[in-house]
Length: 361
Image 1 (spheres, rainbow, N blue to C red):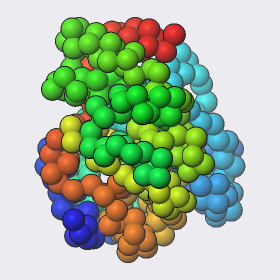
Image 2: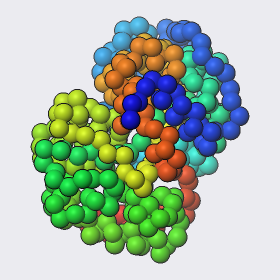
Image 3: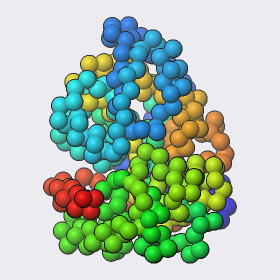
Image 4: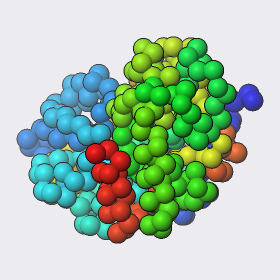
């Protein structure tokens, strides 16, 4: 299939048709307000808590240079790790990144500050279809950052079998040679999907069966890695992996033998968002940072290093066509039709936690 830039735009239309409510404003021009933020807050600091491998150092340095605001940078590897630290009272964070379902959870637990969108005029650069999502109506507590999916990446030089689905990875050919995301919702969700059930299932029997399936997969798992799973694919340590779409794309750039497989069962689609934790000491600086990131050229610079699908429509003219046209990043509609966003599964998360601990013990 020939994937064009228009394909990516159509995909966005499809995803947001199921994902968002009413629409907000469209594209706009870049503006800056960081210098004023630093003066308003006085201390000139920003405490950033974000996924690893998700923000280029040069972008941080550019923000510091332009605003005089010093950025203190800490990382985590999963939504659950971030939630645990913030809900346990880890004080001092001004800004973090949370996926769709996690924004909903944190909002319900009163762990987020309302965002003053008047301080973020560059929100006008976002595709309007990404605004006003069901997990945060009106974007009262979140601002879109990146979106994407989970795919299979396969080293064709090392794998004889024709891989079409997640189920194929249970083959003994992959003994001790898979790298998978260290993410309980994704792995258990795949187990659910293999049963023909939702990735968001709260049925104890379904979750238990997923545990059994994943235990059967353990002999094939060489490593859990949500930070940089592409590394083992590129250097040949792993024959295949369950990875972020952007990581599959980057692995294929470094090693052309690595190819993306869009699993026939469908997958997880996600959207990550900037949030301001409750009690943030430098909220004005956090809003200035978000506004800085949403400048088209800056947003495109991030996509250069971490090519996840970008909701900043104004940035697309600065993003490499190879990224915009790659199905690992901007997947076709028929694949997304079979895929799901995660939702807040409420008390069932305790069952997921228990099962995940038993799988990894």
